Length: 237
Image (tube, rainbow, N blue to C red; front, side):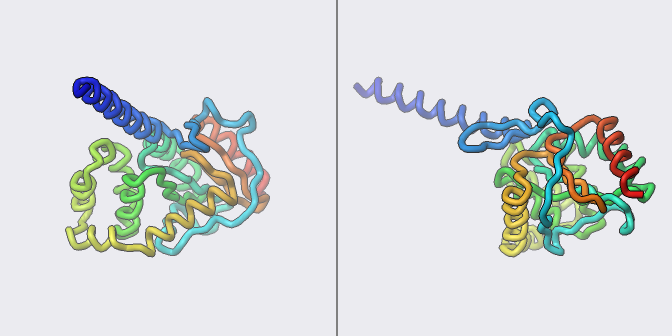
């Protein structure tokens, strides 16, 4: 009987470990869980239409406002991203630089990166990025997207190491971790995106202009973004 109980316990433990690992893997791949079902947010599962009209205000606190580009740009792209999402990482590392060169640096587009954390680890990374001086924000985000050890290890010390490389002390990190207002701001933005725009996966993008707001679900190729942005810009003239 004792052997049977031990065997059942080991089997149960393996199931728990499998579920935990699977959940982490799916999150990293850009999945979110909706009603207990994993939903993939990428081009394969995106809606047929490239974009869809949406309405409502994007809720961002002053501490979350990180704008890249010229203030009078005719279009603004809001990128809802999780630091744990590999599709978000691919967009940030390979597609955003091209958008920056052709649209942001030329005054056609403002870009706002919005943290949409889908787990506790990416929430902590989001908070640390906002606690850094604004001029270090982009480089910190880029570093974390290139170095995934901080996420897969799940250890605070690994993420702390990167925060320290950008000038934060242990006291700075602890103060940031304890900042309940910042946590609340991020969660309010998350909740607003869910309820107002039905954003349920990462990455997702809202492009706003004089003709309104449009939502793009999932990452696309640079050429697709380029064609879409040029079409929107032609309507802004």
